[in-house]
Length: 168
Image 1 (tube, rainbow, N blue to C red):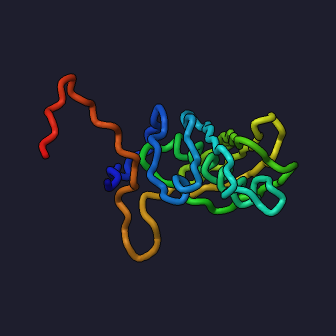
Image 2 (image 1 turned 180 degrees about the vertical axis):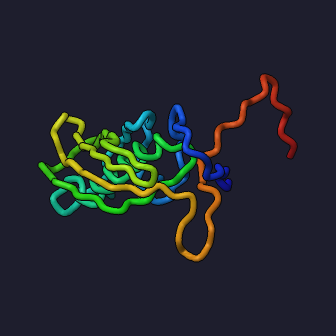
């Protein structure tokens, strides 16, 4: 099924960010808990595919979770506009195990940029990593083609109380 699209629009902050369809993030298993009012929370239950040779979360997985969390916090302050990462600095405190949870917030927003911070803790509450990031708001990608829509996760259709029987 092809995801729905949402037009890139004005600058009115939404009540909450709608989940975007991102194949890479979906493949990792990242789940959006919430993103609204300049804050976000995302979780990732670790599987064997997320681990490094020490059997702890790979640093790239931890950084991706932070990148997603920071970007969602930034997007939550601009209705419809996308963001791209301009710069991100990550400090790793200790290995992550179990479920990773990233919480992020916008520290400052200008007309075109958002400056964010976020932290990852694991399922035992251990402080895993901290990141600071700069994100640019855009309505199109500068790759020689104008992007007017982003993929969004389709909302489930409302089921009728008495669905029609299936035909063979």
